[in-house]
Amino acid sequence: MIGILYATLPEARPFLKRTGAQQTGDRPFSLFRLPNLAALVMVSGMGKVAAALAAQTLIREKGCDRLINAGVCGILVDSPVLAPGQVMRVTEASEGPPGPGIRGGSVYCTENRWPDLPTARLVTVERPVFDAHVRRRLSQWGELVDMEGAVVAWVAGLYGATCAMIKGITDTADDGQRTDLHYNLAAVSDAIAAHLVNGISDDVTHGCGSP
Image (cartoon, rainbow, N blue to C red; front, side, top):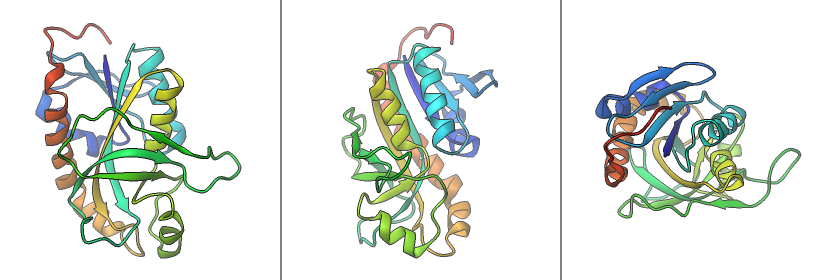
């Protein structure tokens, strides 16, 4: 069973619409079932704690042995090959600089469902990054930044589940980039959905069971 984890409904909505997913629950997390596919979609809410709890719920309570974390992110580096609108495959994720309550080291996303997508490393943080100084500091550990991915990969590894991660860039995580995030959110989420549908197409079955 595949568990697809989004942080927010606006990020998930294009994928839910493309697949005809039906909502089957809303507590403690919004849960959707995909027709003709052994897959569930869960919307966790933003942040590390919510993502960790949702990932654990998908594995322990819903029987998912493969997790996919999908959603938007910002860019931590100035690069001619990275720009808002691009969709990336994350190969490794970390929580950045070690500190109290922060796990050191990276978690690797070894499941490759999108071999044609460009790859990057992800840093997962507690709060949204729209600050040039914080951006420069975090860039030592990765090219992209979000608030959920590393802990989803960490929980998956803890339970022996595989994890794949697909992220779409909405902004450069720099000063004053909140406007860009909101402006690009819908289009980037739709682009993620298109790649995600293709990435799970080989998993189509004749029934996905009960969530």
